[in-house]
Image (cartoon, rainbow, N blue to C red; front, side, top):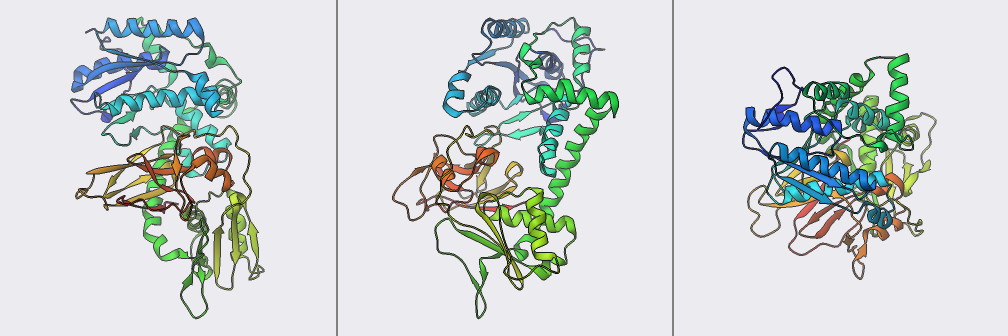
Length: 472
């Protein structure tokens, strides 16, 4: 097996692998993925890895895509590596889901990776995301108004539910310019995808227009600064998750205060509420106040943006704010001030919004939930716990559930309903739309949905008990 000359090296993150790992290297034929494969060949010998190649043919770009597949086939053959060539129909998915071509292709690609990991033939799929990709992602999320957790960008490791497998990104610290120099030093050709220059795509506009402007006129090191922001944001969020897990149980109160003491909660299906004592909220510093307010909303299935969060804080903290003041926010969330409490509630919706092209768009954002056990699902800002009500689940991890965005085939049975309903119909009734709808989380177990954010589901006999706890 040929390897790169000793002087030609990339800063591959080898800490993502352990000796004996069976790794499928995702190779599109472009410079990044070809460089990843060449660098992984060195790592395979030095660490002790078994490699194969996976290429996903998206059914787009006609002869150019066929040429990409042939290029990857020849490259894999040159190094005597098994090639898993996967053909998918991207346009059919676009017609079915209404996703953009870019979204549909990505989801089909990651579904192929997941199938490989579920086959138990490999331990990891390595993808060629670079520092430039990270910078573009963080900047795009910033422009869309992401909170700190959104600025965590592309994660180095993503665990794949119901497997021991993972998707890893060993080149997140490598610049694209380094990759091309590395390939030239090896005399290694690669394929160019003309669609990468198409500025109709937001990422390409950021890549070819915005970032070059920022480098030239503001900060030549902007890419590395943005990538470092992602690392900081991930670590900051982990710290906040620990702090909130400690504080929230004593801060969030169910329902509303009842006459004579105690708490009252609604008996209406799908209606949820949570309260916070205003005097206790006043004692918190501003950063913690925001996170507590967002966590309270998340607890009842609502996501707040900055303006909504500040409006709620003003409602309960301004001296001139009066008892009985009320705000109606997005997705049916209502904030009310009582003499001593802030109450957030989210009731059932009767008006369904029209279904639009917003099917799930986070196929790869999935987490394994051991039963019994817990998992932090950072993408959904929730920590999930599962109690082992199933027979035979005596030790952590002896059974598994999956925390993921809903999928078009998913169905749920609501409490007090006559039978199962499509998740997309339930979301329409809840008036959930746009990006929020596209990434709405559920917990799946043995082909059934046990939990869905904001929905009161009928219990399933013999199933584990699922609880979701806000992180922020």
